[in-house]
Image (tube, rainbow, N blue to C red):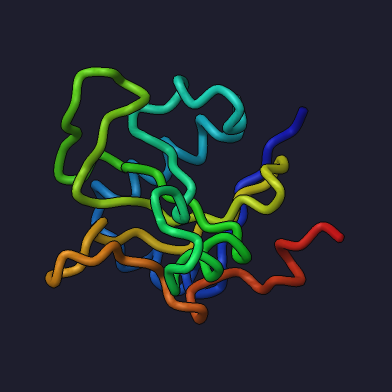
Length: 137
């Protein structure tokens, strides 16, 4: 199977301004995804998680993340914590959309996992890929 990495418009605009460490981590994620997809997450250095995981279904962010197929990858910035390679976490995450767990992911942003108030950061709708682009139906 062929795996494809695409980018939201906002991600492409921001990418030129990312520091080198972020660019390298993003490139590594993209390369591993293109080689293996996400079925075997042990191929990745950090944890890959759906962004609705551990949210109660009545939480305001649950439907937002689920309907937009939002996931995040612990990118290892500033460093990884934890011993088990594929389950390590970090302070920064790469947000992406993975529609229907298919062969394509859409990278949407890189950001601190939590805001200064301690809430889980989610990319705003303006950062996401168009739903027509990510919806295979």
